[in-house]
Length: 545
Ligand SMILES: Cc1cc2nc3c(=O)[nH]c(=O)nc-3n(C[C@H](O)[C@H](O)[C@H](O)COP(=O)(O)OP(=O)(O)OC[C@H]3O[C@@H](n4cnc5c(N)ncnc54)[C@H](O)[C@@H]3O)c2cc1C
Image (cartoon, rainbow, N blue to C red; front, side):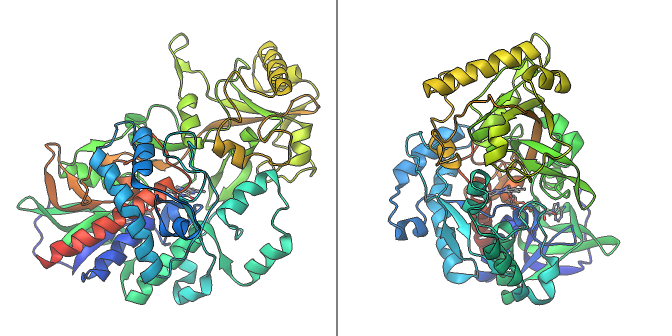
């Protein structure tokens, strides 16, 4: 039951709950459309998952690609997006994304500190109709942290992206670790430059500060206040007490998903998630608050899942650091196998899609057949490529399991030895014939781009030079993508499909517009900030009414 509030502690026009990319964008747009905006952030740092991310945005028909001579069209973008959304979001939502995302990019480029640059990343399913081999993913120019003044130390640091690298540099660096000279990186660091998600959030935060938008840290939104069916404010935990804040135009939920809420995970997700790379504050508060006022929830079984690994002993803020396993499954001289020692998927596909194979449920054993699974690689991989934090030819770390024979390796980690030997023999014969006729590895534009351009084949290479290595993979997540359903104006809908007046949602908190799919690098932040843009404008309009 929503409490009746007689004395408000504060009154504003629009509240953005959460200081990730979606929340900051909503606040900027609300402000620029005449509203008094307030940002609430439950942690003591700004930026959420967006700050620790690669900071890429996937936006079709953006002006940066056009300026670089890459053509795109509404028809192509719609055809591609609808295919990947697979009917799990309304067509008008997908159309709104395609029609609005490029306006967001233009707006931020023209009116804020945000400075986009082209990334060469191909769309994740580059073979689908309407896909592009690059241009829709936008990176962020480096940002000088000291521009934030006293807010500099409030920018959430990233456990993974702490070296100032562009998205392409980071991804291509797995195959070619010395592609960015060390002195270049040292120079960037000495100038206090941050890249990736820190650059994006740094630039958005600076834009908020320049506008005088208030940001309350350590302020956790807990309950929506409703009067006559309209959301009119929030109960917030701050300064050790309940604070009541009124929002004349609307509350924009931008407080991400529920990956850190064990109960919600087991209620909604199709399989286990052992670790997350988002900061540990996304506990589904937005879903709880929206459900309490009757919101319709959708896309709840979907999350941004990836095969991940935690290096023993590596911690950030007392939590294990979840590392994405990308090159280690995509480059030559490596495959992924399950307990039976069998391959089960094209290892090179994007992380979101490969996770569907991780969650394959075997009715015979009543168990997830491919969890855990292992990357199996050999000394040729170790000689050439990065393996998580380990440089080629550096000594093998203690945590990397190795053996002189495949059967010994299999015994050590609990894989069927005969299965593994047979699978590796089969893999080597496929490599020799130059084509993975079993799973199509190396056929996709994205995996070829991320592969080793200097190798005989960017993704195929034999596993035949001991020692052999095994890296156990589990399902990890960067966030969930189910939540309150919204309309094309960002307004949250109730279970009857009617608008809940005064309530908006943007980002991972809302029912994901891409359904089960992932359009391309930047597909989560691109969608989230687009709905931040839409919600900010519309909530500001409501405040004027
Ligand atoms: C290493 C890494 C790399 C990635 N790279 C990319 C990439 O390049 N491109 C891409 O598109 N995606 C990427 N992702 C995923 C992406 O970062 C997230 O999907 C996205 O940032 C989510 O944005 P958001 O605004 O919805 O939420 P967040 O950025 O997580 O922000 C939500 C904020 O809400 C706060 N909050 C939670 N509950 C409350 C409450 N009750 N009251 C107040 N505040 C609250 C949280 O503390 C948090 O600060 C990456 C993720 C990681 C970890």
